[in-house]
Image 1 (cartoon, one colour):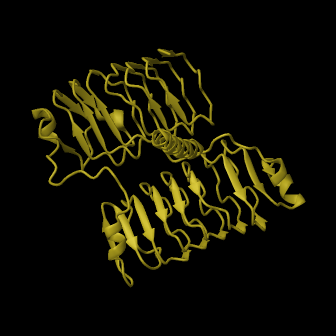
Image 2 (cartoon, helix red, strand yellow):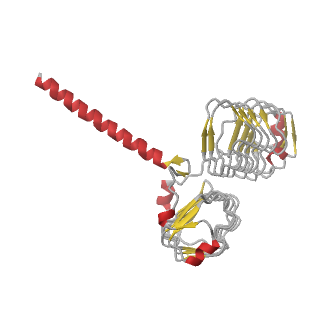
Image 3 (cartoon, helix red, strand yellow):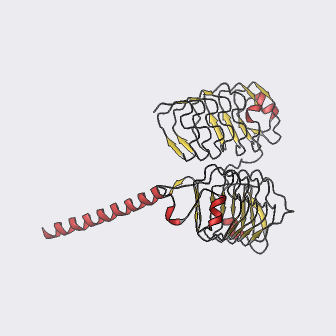
Amino acid sequence: LQKIEEATFKNWRSLHFVYAPDLQVIGNQAFMFCFNLKRIVGCKICTIGSKAFYYCYGFSFIDLKMVEKFGQRSFQDTNLSKIENKVCEIIPAQCFCNNKQLIQVDFNQLEYLDFEVFDGCIDLQHVRLPKVKGLSKANFQILTASADSSRCTKSVFKEPSRPLVTQFQVQKSALQKLSGSDCFELNRILYFNQKIYQKQKFSHIKGVILLKCREIDQCAFQQHQFLQFVLCPRLKKVNFNSFYQCQQLQKLYSRKLKVLNVASFGKCTVLKQISLEKAETIAESCFQDNQLIVNVSLPKCKFLGQDCFVGCSSLLQVVGEFKDEDFHQNDRLVVKDNEILFQEMLFGQKFVERAHFTKNLYQQRKMCNYILSIQSIGENFGK
């Protein structure tokens, strides 16, 4: 496959992954509104049409090195964190706008850049622009430029004083450091032993570790624009608006979560991973306007609030033991025996069933080889 025509996969909200090693051209609106699309694998892409990935909220990986032509708004409201390109000379208006996870860009051949292209990219920190001769609307206060960027670029932006952090992962050494009520930050991840209070401010944080926290106060993380994940193994209760409008929140880990109060995860657009296996109360508007949740299992749910899944456009089913009145509120509720059985579920970047199958196949081959070697030894011994 060398070309994907206009609007081919538009509104395919169950699409997660595309493997197209020979792909060269992506047409206008080709993947528009594919909310669950995460990555495209292919290194020959040279043309991308307008609004090709428009509002692909979960889209985080594509090889753009050889793209010569970008269309207008082709990557508006995606989840890209890095852009690297070797050949493009012109970028159209608002091509990458509202990429709130975008941290660094690298355009090797670009000679002029209007920073309106990156309008709404609130976390953009670093650029490499070796041939740029003109810049406009460069009002990013914290932006730095690489040492080999052009004189024009470095006249506007300073060189970085410390290494750029692009990976936000939990450090084992940091977890070991926690004791008592210690609280510290490392690489934009907040490590905390006890309870988070609403008065604390950490708007730049990418991740939060709460080792002993059992309850999160109302509005504690409301409208945190950069927060991507929360690890809280003992958490049982999330209060009113605790994570409301955390539009970049993707994961919350706690297998003890029981109570989710009103709008606790409302407008968390890209929230994908959250364990609800022990949840007993899901209050009103709890997951309002989430665009990535497809399948929800609530085996112990006793109370399901009104409109708790309103606006969840990708949601196919909510499985549990529900009361008759619950079914009148939500047409996607199903009982256990009537649930959709998915062939394969994608969690994060991993195909879980495929990984299990590959592992089992490897073990079986290893066992077969072992048996064959034993048989061979026996035959040789008999001779």
